[in-house]
Length: 205
Ligand SMILES: [Zn+2]
Image (tube, rainbow, N blue to C red; front, side, top):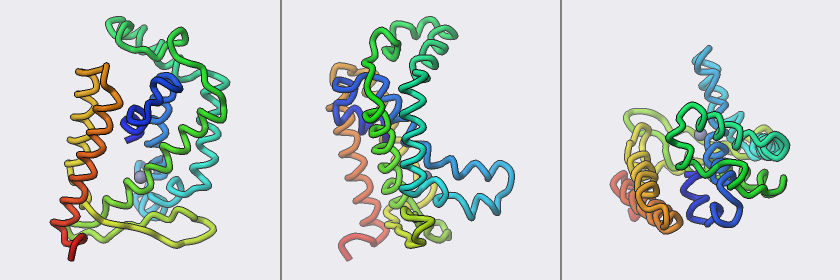
């Protein structure tokens, strides 16, 4: 979602490729609160969709992501490392220091924040189904325990993954039309969500 949003908004042209990578990475960051699952399932149930899925954690982690990229250029370092391991990618990956635009700390943190905030509504529309209960997002935790969910598609629905990854494949095939491909991808995703919500009896009843 982060990558498609960045392409759709034209950030690869306006801010450079590092902004697209930042959006892609940051859009997954709220799910750090699912890591306790590796050690203790009960802690996972308490913390997932809470600890990392609130505006305060998002604000702080966006500052960390933005500052570390601004100061240490980890996106370019990882790109260079990948290029070193897979030389054939060297001409494919444009995220190198010489070709990426250096953008400011505020812009980097802003991109990270936007991508993380986008994560919240995306999680809210995926919930319940298959005998499972809805899992609310609490965007103002720990100040407020108010939870929100709008379960348009059930857990485990492969539709969004198929649509978003098809969009990525199309982006690779038509690199001259990245914004258009991502806009269409996001549009198809919205139509799919509305269709699935209608099938679940959530809309138009
Ligand atoms: Zn999440």
